[in-house]
Image 1 (spheres, rainbow, N blue to C red):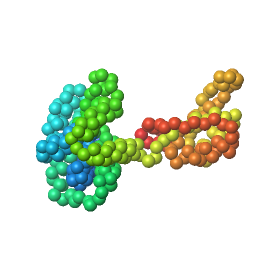
Image 2: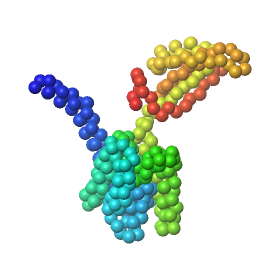
Image 3: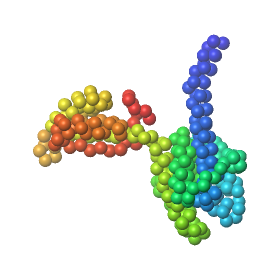
Image 4: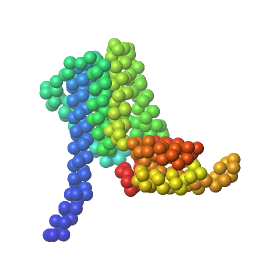
Length: 291
């Protein structure tokens, strides 16, 4: 019995609690998106991309409830996704979509509409909606629609996920110019741009990481100061000058965004003639960093 109790406790800590945490994060993101649609997007007549954009058009022109449009349009997409994509992604995406569809009508009577101008409605709908969608994407899910179609297109035809999603949204936005006031469509584009930026912030975080390459005649001294003053590991890469043929030690290190000024200060202080370039890193794992 003690062994079983220990096994169950281990299972709870390693599997059940992270699973519950993921479900809560996805559901929270879905509820945030529902609040944004009820408080800012629909009251101000704004549009959106993907399946939500089509559902909004149906709501504005045919008075089809927005949540019903999202649900109906996603059914064939999820059926297709079940055949093509991993069950985990589909399961979490079903949870995210279901949470938003359920939350939309439930919280609508309790969601006030702020009295702001259309520009502020566009900006804040993009910002807050980006937080919600970013949470959902960060935890390995989606709200269905073009997200799933984009991944299927990538798998079947090797099409870029971003490109496929962009062209789907472009078609919907271009069609909207013929159906709605161009002013509304242009503000929708502003909202979508803000949303995209906030989603990136939520997924990647403010503490983005940079890869730094430094070529100097004083590589040893620079490396020592980076390790001591910035507390980051340094790797020497063997290089050779193409013109001179002289061997060179190339410094490579990864630091966060806030540490870049200090690294620059060290390099310039040691060798003002050093060659340095900084690039974005999509993901870093290992000691001192998190995935």
